[in-house]
Structures are given as C-alpha cells and as structure tokens.
Image (cartoon, rainbow, N blue to C red):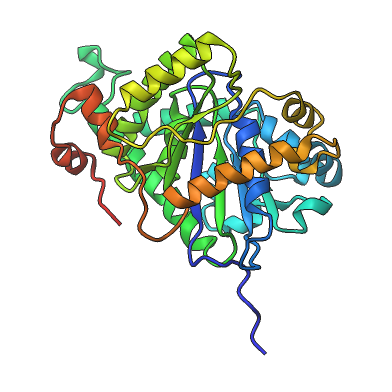
Length: 350
C-alpha cells in the first residue's frame, strides 16, 4: 500500500503578514490564522501548516514554543538563519521545520524558528550582493570604491528571492498546505524577502493615524516588490486589528481606508476587536485557540470567520478575487506600465 500524501494541496500557499509599525498585532494574527488553518475542515480534511518567523524579535517563535525547542536541541537548533545561508541550499527545506508538539495542533503545525541575528545576516547577504555589483567603468581612483550598480544589485535580489521561493514550493510540495510568514515592522530586506516568497500578502493595521500612514508606506513596498521581485504576488486584503467600535478615531480611520480603496474590495469585512482574551493568550505564549477561558470561543469564531473570508478571496490555488498590487503601484506612481521595469529586473512570471 502506498504511503498517503501528507498535504491536501499540490503546492503550499504562502501568506505573509506585514506592517511598517510594531504593536499592530502581526504576530498575534499569524499565530491565530495558523491555528485556524490547522482545524478540521467541513470536508474532514486537516491541513498541514508551516510557520516561518522572519522577525529578529522572534515573538512568533516564542508563542509556538521556541524555549522548549532550545531546551531540547540546544546548539543543534536550526533557524531561519541556517535556511538563508547559501551554503545550506542543498538541505531539504522541511528539515528546517520543527513540529509544534502541543495537543491542539495534533502534529499538523511546524515552525521554522526566527533568530535574533537575522539583522546581521541580512546585512551580510546585502553586502555580498553589493560587492558583486560594482559601478561599471569606475575605479578606486575615481572615488567609487564603495559604490555599486543599483540595477545589478536589484536584479541579484530578484534572482535570490526567486530561488528561495522555488525552493520552498518544490521542497515543501506535498508536505505543507499553507505557509504563514511573520515579518519585522520595517520595509527592509527581510520584509522584501517575505514578499518575494509569497503568493498573498495581508497588511494588518490598528485604527490610528500613525498606523494609517504606515499602511500607505506598505502600499508602496508591496507595489515595488511586485514590480521588481514577484509578479505573482496578490493582496489578500487589509485587516483591521484591535478595533474599538465606540472610539471615534477607530471609525474615522476605517472610513479613510475605505474611501482610499473605493472601488476595490480591499478592506476585509472581518475585523478583530480589541480583546483582553487574545492578548492574554499571546502573552502566555499560546494562541486563542488554546485558551481555556470561557470567553475564548467568541474570539476563536472571529478568526474562523476571518479565515472563511480569506478562503472566499484567496488562500487557494484556484481563481481568486484578490487585488493585484498594480492598484497600489498606480496609486503611488500613476497608471504606468511596469513591463519594462520587470524585464529590466529579470523577473519572469512562473
């Protein structure tokens, strides 16, 4: 008898959660979406979920048991740093993931842990690419010893990101159905890398003025990464987190976002309310799906509703109703064609 395929989907669907500001609930969103994905579907199928922590703060890793992994594996623990090391590119990707050994997940969720040295690692990767992209026709005598060809550097980034993306898709085919990626609160290399790997991006914001400004910055980043690194990227929607309905500012920011995206179904109808229960679960390194508090089921149902909405828009290999990042590109750069830019960067559709 042949061994049954572990995953339901042919290739893993990769979702990245982003925002250019801390404290908006990216980690909480990642953890609870992953937990909701691991529940039994109405069809009886249960997906296998992989979680990647690309944030040097490693908060998501802590929620999913980093302390226990460090205690068990010690110096032998491998992290995202080892995965990104080009010397390890021949190691199968699934060997970097650790099963989260907790009853709720029933061996269905695995973690590729983050590492606090990710910042220095990404600096090393960027330096190596820049050092191989010198300005043509310039020499040290001209005073350009530390300069580099920006176009060549960006093309190398595009090729690097595409290589990681193909490695994830091919190595994890039949092993994971969904990959959820947490990112640092920045527009830097690590967030760009996550967008380069992804099928879908989910910006998360809380209803505040600074956070709305951060969302606008995220629009530009998504547009740039789509044009330069990943023409297959789609926007799953924009999620409002930590909403307080009776707060005037919350209502105002929500309306501003809806007005900005008028004509596009970008704002998700499901909104995550401000909740002590959700915060308590995360502070105790647990998802709300693992909380034993009597009120927790209310919030579990909200995340289930969110997941259902994402299923109706995205998170599938079939035709979807997501929004192309070209909408963001046109918002920031005007209705220009990006074909020439993508060709210059060497990015090709799969």
